[in-house]
Amino acid sequence: MKAKKIVIILIVIVLLSVTFLGINSVNTIDNLAYVVSLGFDITDSGKLELSFQIAVPAGSSGGSSGSTSSQSSSSIISSVECNTIETGINLVNSYLGKKLNLSHCKAIVFSEEIATKGIGEYLYTLINNIEIRPTCNIIISKCNAKYFLNNSKPLLEPLSSKYYEVASTSARNTGFTSDTTLQEFFSSFADSFSECFAILGGINNGGNSNSDSSATEGNDSTYTASDTPVDSQTNIETMGIAVFKEDKLVGELNGLESICHLILVNELKNATISIPSPFESTNYIDLYITKSKSKSKVYISNGTPFIKPNIKIEARIVSMSDDYKYLNKENLELIENYANNYIKSYINNYLYKTSKEFKSDVTGFGRYAVSKFLTWDKWDKYNWLDNYQNAFFDVSVDVHVKSRYLIIDT
Image (cartoon, rainbow, N blue to C red; front, side, top):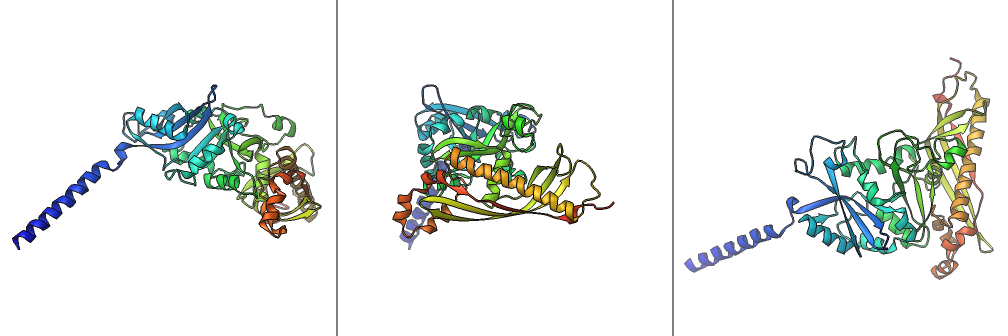
């Protein structure tokens, strides 16, 4: 009996020893450096430069928990020139004395320069990293990615990670970009139905006015990131969509073209667009789109794609140049006709720009086209992603303006 007790005591001692030894080897919050964003650049010598935006814990010597206006108060930037992502992480680990942890990474930023050369090799590493969440956003920066991260200043958010969340989901309020995640980007990169696209980002230097599209269109929605006339302190902004062909950046869409994209893929939440007034040619009427639905049919005729998008939109008037008390049924129909023609024109421009200029099916019409092929081998042999550039389009748009929001005969 005594021997049995001794054995039990020894087993308990061994188990407790193993438990406490294990605790010492576990990564705790004090041993980890949490990355909130990751930047990719290419050096003049052709090597990879990785930039890590690392959260600074509240109360640490790296920053003040009471200040949110300075980027350095909530995060620091560490960069390294390396051959691969993993070697770059190891080099930064040796410098920090802590282990980089990517489980809270909210944004992966590629510079235009490296995206133009191709990012396929990095995508496979990122998607295979168990720490990186598939829901983090992909941003293509019109400037150096390191510079982009350095100018990330969470003015209205106490945490840098939350700031990136808010910046990307602005697409829900404006429609000026698409909330693209790593998972969605890689899926489009790997399949044969569509091409990939990403959020277009840039730096606002305080009221830019150099957008070629805005100068010619006179429309507040035709800007891209870093070209908007917003007058504010230097900070990052997201507006537009970066378009890819395979793993290479081939072009960009402005804010209004991004709205067209979201309408066609049925992902538009809310948006405000300005259409020319049918009453005064020099003025605009603002329409707030509350609901949109798009159905597309794809036909293959003599090997050429023929695509028929059918779009229905509900909108309401939110501002006009004057108080038109005579907004009767006939005038509402006139506004609807103007809206139909205006939106149809921009959707046509978007479709022919992506197909003829970019040769990239970022809309994903291939998902409709695949049903026209009896076997996978025939679909694969047809090579939709290369044939999309030969497509023709017949767009139908039906805009319904809700008259109950108007004040008539006041």
